[in-house]
Length: 120
Image (cartoon, rainbow, N blue to C red):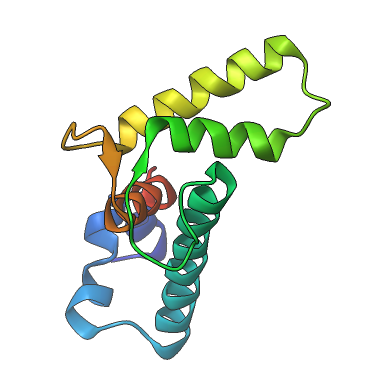
């Protein structure tokens, strides 16, 4: 395979050597850092919404995500932007709630966010 033909392969196929041979130390470190960041993101989401202390794996409801995003946006956000932010947060929650339970556990948030990172 030439380098150019490998880049044309789907990501899943191109990643096969990584899966079969295992990640390099650098790749494993980067993956570990990403997962740690996403775990902190979920904890901050819970803290910003005022529904968790950020230390546990409690679940987050749609209202938690909306509240956290609005909290992050601050007071200078226009009413139109707040409406857009609320709708975007609700859509993100719906996309992340694969099981339709109307709440997200940390592992579900991680899965959703990792899929976003891997999306073509």
